[in-house]
Image 1 (spheres, rainbow, N blue to C red):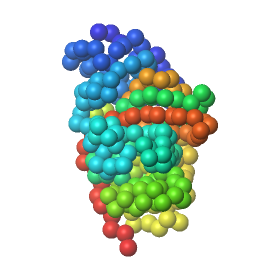
Image 2: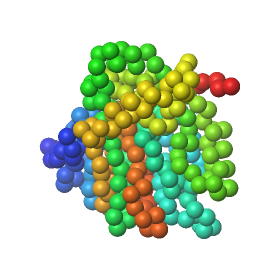
Image 3: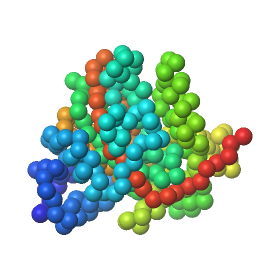
Image 4: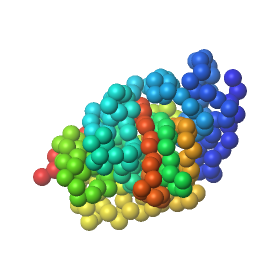
Length: 288
Ligand code: SIN
């Protein structure tokens, strides 16, 4: 198989055109997709009108899947390998706890000791306008830093807090936040991580990070803000406008992303995500 690739932006991303990811696929054909994944950071597969089982099966080719035990209330009731990102109300009519998922720059599962390798998000329902997702290429962002800054941040570990998610003051949201806090104590990861497959260095940060280990919030914030702003400059970013049945695959080891609130919240947006587990990283931080 020879893949037909179309670049999505200068900074990252490619569409793999004319492909059905649910069709039988040889190891060598999958190898080409895997190569494209490593080269582009984000891959788009359009028109994937496939079943949930097929979504899960294709995702498994990239590695072991998370059962989302760290997000019990966000799991699909029948498929623990699928995490819901939806503003569809729950069966009892209460708002979905995942309606604000991803509204800050982050990489998936950075609040765990096995942060994700990659995620595959499938779009089931999208509002008339907006509901976009943006991605930043953290390898390019790292490589654009001065040698002095690269050296400085290579020594730092950042503390990632769970529950970086926007919340309302409802009882359900507050209970959800408390549960997340209990399930996921704060963890520290290196600010510069080496991609285990490409060997390239990337910034590993985002808006779940409030401070560096061994430093106060006030001391850490200016540098965190600088690095997050630097990494999300237009030249490092791709903004995805969803179509139904798009599947977007991203590499959590060298990109970060944000789900935008740029749509009418009365309209439905429903996504389902598989999360491929990554390699162990980081340590638990005792916080007084
Ligand atoms: C996520 O952060 O995994 C969800 C992104 C999105 O809903 O666009």
